[in-house]
Amino acid sequence: MEYTIPLDPEACWEAVANRDRSQDGSFVYAVATTGVYCRPSCKSRQPRRENVAFFPVPAAAEQHGFRPCKRCHPRDAGVIDPQAQLAQQVADFIAGHLDSGGEPTLAELGAAFAYDPQHVQRTFRDVLGVTPKQYAEALKVARFKSGLRSGATVLDAGLNAGFVSASSTYEGGARALGMAPAAYKRGGVGVTIRSTTVATPLGTMLVAATERGVCAVGLYEDAHEAQDALHAEFPRARHESDAGLGSVVRAILEHVEHGAALDVALDVQATAFQWRVWRALQAVPRGETRSYAQIAEAIGEPKAVRAVASACASNKAAIIIPCHRIVKSDGSISGYKWGPNRKRALLQAERD
Image (cartoon, one colour):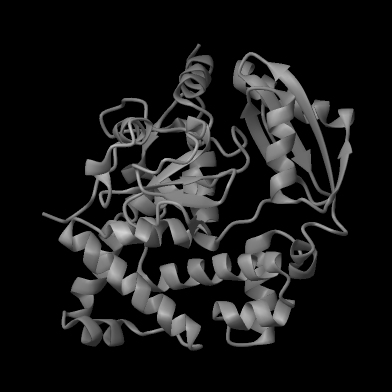
């Protein structure tokens, strides 16, 4: 039997809500609005459920750009499961090599941990959902973004992240950021982001767009929360209110309520793997659902179930990229960034 570490989002959330110390080391939770990940027992202010994602080990949270909480020190909790512990150790080894300007080969990983290289890769993939090579690429992008935000030059941020040259920094960085690295470094300076919020049966819908296309679609409690989330991602962009985007909102709602065709240009940051997952989601017919395992099969990577779940969690264009069509293998409702009730409503609307 192949090893996996299942995470039940509702059980994880209950542990976080109760600050259950017995679950420390079993998983960590990350908060989108702060960029921080914590152990379940952390005494920091409890976040909104829709802003929380769960990861089996600290390395998985760091892969997505989250940083450890300075209050609860989640790394100090260790990792309880031995397989997960090996995956965390391999991830730390990869991170250390990136610090010194290199990316370890699979053979080097096997030698370092005295295991067959294929065993290392299989264990790592089962826990984190990606191969060591895919993890290294994602970690480089996360470090690159962090370096830019902290004020480093584009080249320094790229080299410190593990990119080996200026050309690979600009090529890989721009593809992942969705805009020129220099613009991202400046918090969006030079980029105009137009947005609007509209009350809908699903809550307040935010639609934001650059000149390239829609960069965010979200469902929030109110317009204030929606705008706070948008400004947090691009604090120094030029933000403009644009009621003209109401036509995009209407197109989205027509798509949800009546199945109207939806053809909207997107400008969202993503890795190549995330785009493969999102395209597979867009291919799921209206009114139908798929499991994470079925999407993994559809993109030709049946072992990448956890990575598929992570790609869904990172989706910044709700409904246009229909991750609400993903359910558990038994057909029950799984986690959803905008809340399970909205997910049920979306699915019901598509089936009516």
